[in-house]
Length: 147
Image: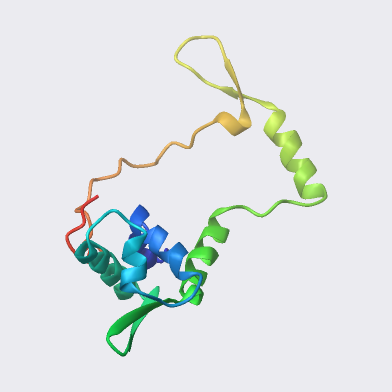
């Protein structure tokens, strides 16, 4: 299952940049806000979304709040993405895939002639038409940010 909360939090370029800035270590909000041309309240809203997803935490030091990145919270995203990307095949499996992909496949068409298509260019046909569903509610509040 995809890590929706983290992906939603990282769906904004400003929040991605905040995560990059926090890689250097905990930072107060004024240091983070100085890196952007948007208002400090807008930065605070972005930080709130990142905090709700669990990517960052906030700790009070005297009069300032410092935000820290939790890199380990990105592990589910990395795991999910690695499952999507096929691992390279080795030995006989790779050779078998190469030969089967390069062989032409005959596909029947309404015309009497036969159309020759490479096996890796044939798109799967869905068995049943897919009914539209209601969009799911986002797992993480966007705090007023629309996509």
